[in-house]
Image 1 (cartoon, rainbow, N blue to C red):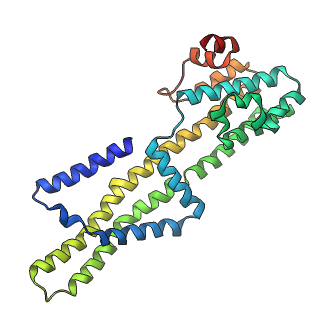
Image 2: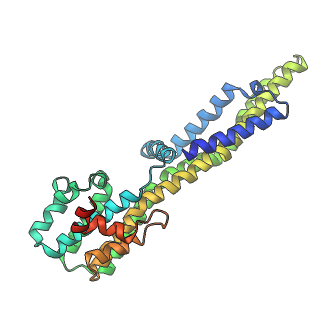
Image 3: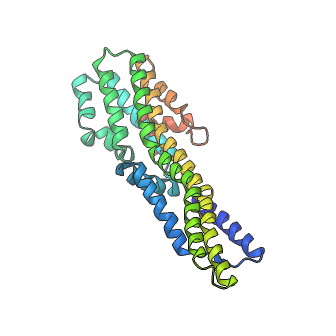
Length: 289
């Protein structure tokens, strides 16, 4: 919603100001200039990135438009899942606990948190490190370093759409100049025409420069920043898992370990201790229900 509101404000003020100055909107409507610039921008995106990144850029754009970031209920579900798994690790024999990590799709614990189970990458991350904890001879600082490395790799991959779209945004002003030059070339071929016709051709050529600059700084650059913010919030769940499991490995009880994870949530989205208790302690969950 914020993306649409921002676009409406930007475009509305731009066009409104132009009309208030006495401009005519029909002059700006130069579809072939838009085709030239848009086509070159799309070609730049495809040329500079693997097709997987191009597809992911489309997905990231939709996520940015819909603001698809974890909400408070998602954080509570994640903390509840981690608490349940750590309680199993602490109280159950190895052969019983292993089934949850070997086949999470059929695990009763994961089934209790369907929204988390849909995130296959996160589920794999949790299961991999719970297996290492289950082995029993892993050192917490070694696991933490391994987690940090994997989280860094995940973040780098998640931000590829941001880098791809930001690159196109940086190129758009120059692509607008290319379209403008082509328009000037066309205008030069009409020097024998009347000043009215020639002026219209030159004005149409300058629309290319205008559109390239506006699309860059008014649309794609802010969109890229939005994508980066959304993807970073999505990646924050991995840090929550890391902090919780490392605290558990260092001897914290499951209820205390999830508190370490809770502190990794931004204050605006962070659930209270009581909310976490209601989501993790069986008795409190039943009472809350």
